[in-house]
Image (cartoon, rainbow, N blue to C red; front, side, top):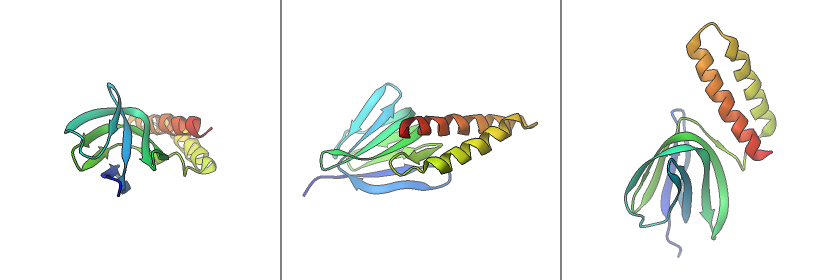
Length: 132
């Protein structure tokens, strides 16, 4: 039986992933961090980038995150991210529609709405760039 570590990716609105994995690679602020079972304890800030989930010694799934915090220990990897999107299951048309909706909010009178719309637009563009 293959050793696994429990991966959880959580955003303010949902638990995106909660599953055992062989390995996960996260976009740490100081570079990529690969986490295997029995990893030493680490807490790191994360940059926008891909989280790569491995099964059978190959990438089985990819998610784009918009920065966050990772806690890695001997039995689990927990990622708290403001935004996350599965790249391998992304629907390009749905993402393009979301992008248009966010871009339409970028001219709002409320600066908070504008700021959030710009962050969301930027993230969706990054996901779209990755899926091609």
